[in-house]
Image (cartoon, rainbow, N blue to C red; front, side, top):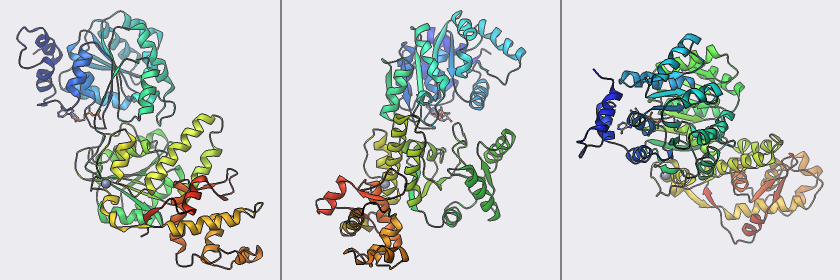
Length: 528
Ligand code: ADP
Ligand code: ZN
């Protein structure tokens, strides 16, 4: 029997191809799928015609076919650049099982194996060859490839070229050389995550300004989005898993290694199959935990974001965040690992005032690059607004990726839309208190002190500073500490209050505060 790839090439040259296009024929025969998903057919036509493309599809959308089919239909070998060795191997194994002639060139091969692959490559025995960017960019490899026809270059996980993104790989920057050395070979860049800004960056850095972008919907309709207020985080997480996802597989994302270890141990104590995963564990442990997670139907991976790209488990039923993700893109990417099989899944995030106060830390970290720092802080602010917002979560997420939509009816905000109240008056009280204190400059007052004054508590600090004689003392006794804190968080997220830049947590008013104080702007939130 002929290898599948040759079958494909026969079809291409066959005179009778009126009804079924060669791509469609191959889709059925080799991959066993009946029809294309949008925008696969369009992308494939575009690349077959020799043009560059940027493909943005959510995880599980079917990006691989966009280059695998043209690889079979264009003469020469398709070079696939991918950052992850494990992922490459899986893909190649799957392709070989389908009868496609594919191979990997990476550091897991012995010297002899490598020479073997290179020999076959030279003889034109592959339709696809997968390699990491650092391998491709060696002069030896570039020269080798120059001796043979190249069908296309596919650059997977193309967002790795973005220096501001979450998976930056410096080697990716070198890939622009492909446009210089192979100006006539089509290139196709693929990613599951990219805002407009990242898209532009990918096109610029890969040197493909004329590439056509193909963007599909980013909606993951089977994921239920929920943001909870952080209180007793472990108990909350435990309740969430117990009530909604008992015996199911999930990922819990934490911000630090320590927290990962602690939380995993705690969950094990509760009787769960919980496994820690972070960059501080040795490679063996990580691999073992990943395998256990992959195989056990009820395993919960408690991980930092080191556990990420390339997770290929279709039945992850929940992704929980016990700390705030760094940006909405991170959040989308991380939660997107749930429910790849299309069955119902949850994205649960708990956050509190302490998470919002992290913003201050961002200022002090990464000060070596002010532009980078600014972007980090902006990304973080967007994340906070998302948490605080009373609008449909899905609508916000999609809008972030440039896609407009109606409220989804399948997120916490859509389900609770009646519990929203006007809190302008309480906001005015809090802003007035901050203003009175601000007039006593030179002193530093944190949020706790402001709330004490509002609630009329005569603490030692309040008495010693004489703050019980302020006009705002006790004007907010009707609200609980928790409610004031919630309101404070909201004011911070709306930039109606800011923290000073010196890291003391002192509150200050902004231009936006004035509009609220004057009653020109109203503020609504879920009071709970
Ligand atoms: P991505 O790389 O975008 O995450 P994959 O290329 O791995 O997604 O595809 C995800 C799944 O969808 C795979 O199981 C693949 O076989 C399947 N798939 C892709 N295209 C089609 C199609 N046209 N019809 C049916 N299934 C498809
Ligand atoms: Zn919604």
